Image (cartoon, rainbow over all chains, first blue to last red; front, side, top):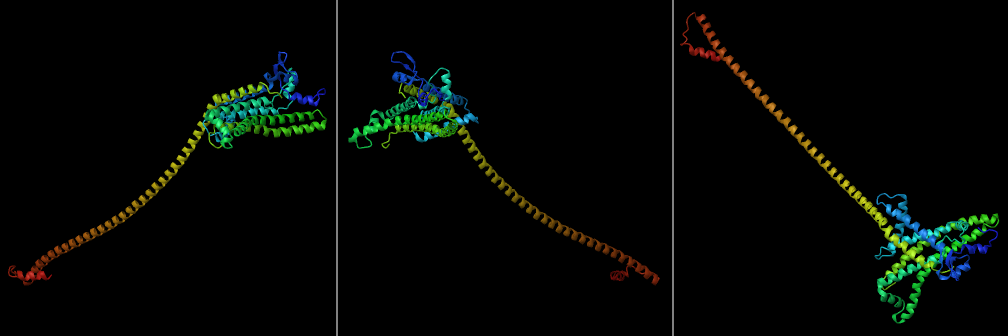
Length: 282
Length: 156
């Protein structure tokens, strides 16, 4: 929460800065003390908070589902197994409808992506000051707990999806077939260069839109939570309106985080399906 | 908002998580789901078969009951007609027997009557001879008057 000595701009900037660990221009490895230092660290720095939270939430997913899978019974399932199976079956069914080719990796990937992104998005519903404030008390100055509001995380996932698109395209169609697909549509073959440029842009748009959509939605959502929190430092009226707004936005956000996780996971399956599609029409 | 090496680490994490899910979590979980689906499908199929069998068995039971009832009716009818014919036969037999007995009785009576008549006749003949002897005070020659005595006995 904004205290007297911190201005609103500083408060917002603080909430949107990652805990960055990297090499300073003078050669020392350290945590950045302010955004300017973080910028100076350049490409080889790492956002410790985003990465740690995303890893942790991924492990939560793996452990939860792993325990259920280990104890899974084909008899009468318990409540928890039922819940997990519902998620698995929902995503798997949709993935099977979209992706009709033979690849056992796609459905588990879709489920992983859905649950993992959902968990990361869910951190957005934790009041924005709780964990950062706790971290400050422990001597950590920056702490962003929603990994999907970090463009590095979302684009990192999107880039892996892009790598899979390229891999499966080349695997299924061959390098020549893939290039032909990029070059011979939508215009006739003599316009191949133009086709290639168009199709290359289309191809590059896939990971970009995938990563930035998730990032944009969650970043905007978090920013609004931060702005609502600024109201709490005003008078009683502003505080009360802030409480109402916080509740309303959180309720709305429940839909957003689920929807964004779902979109990310289903679009991944769609892209894989397109990569597998060797038909003339696409 | 800096693009940095986090992006690469995220990609690697993405791969490790999806791979782990595919390798460790997916097979047992989906296997359990598939097995259960199969069990349920089998159960439903068994129930349908059982219902079909039951309907068939009920139909068979109905048929058997109907047949049995018909057979019983037939047997009953047969028994009834047999009984009545037996009664008829017994009746006619009894009637014949009765008539036969009656006829025998009549014949016996007649025989007895004839025998008594014969006895009476001979007694009368003897009495007539005795009476005539008394009346005539003389011996009637039995041989001379035999014809007359026989005539007298025949007239009685």
